[in-house]
Length: 145
Image (tube, rainbow, N blue to C red; front, side, top):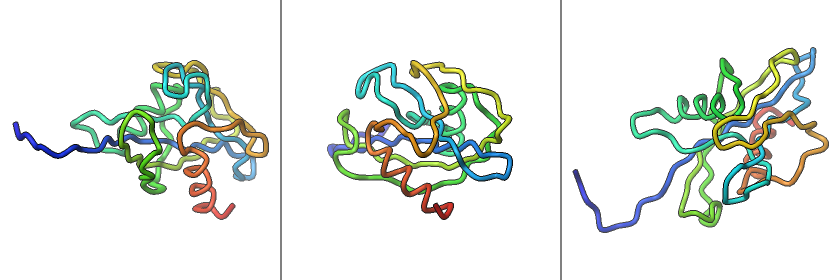
């Protein structure tokens, strides 16, 4: 084992999942209600901490499935989010992923550390925890919205 005297940052992954209408246009956003602090009771993008032997993209897919029951969604990296104060637990960098679910995809089913998991209309979103509004804005700009 190597030991370092310098602090190290945490890394998390987040999934921005849009449900599309029958023409393929994004109409809803998948959100979870957080079961635990920080931001207990607030809405957030599904996500969490990667395992030590796990690729970030695999961690995003795993967290999506654990927290919402949804899987088989192709994920594409949106970017890294590194605002110093983005997470009250510690210095944390998040790598966000974008995916699409069809209009007839199964309803989400909350699990793991999600109290609820639901689709929200893009034009009527609740306030989002952490910097998830910034992540959403970047994802929307990536798809031209």
